[in-house]
Length: 140
Ligand SMILES: CC(C)(COP(=O)(O)OP(=O)(O)OC[C@H]1O[C@@H](n2cnc3c(N)ncnc32)[C@H](O)[C@@H]1OP(=O)(O)O)[C@@H](O)C(=O)NCCC(=O)NCCS
Image 1 (cartoon, rainbow, N blue to C red):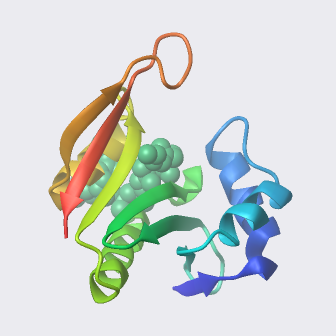
Image 2: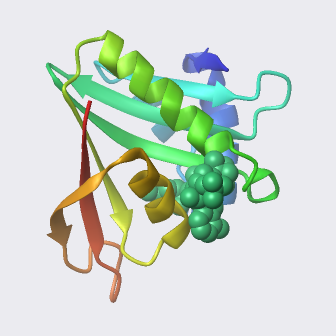
């Protein structure tokens, strides 16, 4: 697993674009990476197939993006990325980690529940017409 820098903005936008529609282009990805308190982890080292982008401010942190290429899913990469993010945030003094997830995203919900995330909020129709976002929190 490596930490992504500005030079990885194109790679991150390609992976993101294969996981979400519409994806974010490399300019948007570079802007995200440049935000204070933001870091991204990419894995595996040899042939990147997924990444996490997180942001920390004081003792609160947020997962902005977590995604794994469709062909690489179900092999533990999402869990590994989340594990490393949590370790890093704990080491950096974060006390809680938040994220938003679509209510119908069962794969992501199972992953987060497995880590002990609990629902602390609801954003109705956050992802368009019919899909609510759940706000989840993990005490670190
Ligand atoms: C969510 C996502 C990151 C999971 O990545 P992954 O590498 O496939 O996940 P892992 O293989 O590490 O699986 C870890 C756990 O997640 C859950 N999970 C993963 N895929 C699942 C699926 N298709 N159905 C149900 N649970 C699933 C399981 O609890 C799994 O643990 P298990 O293997 O012991 O059952 C991936 O599906 C993805 O990129 N989805 C599209 C983007 C996205 O939705 N990101 C999250 C937005 S909030």
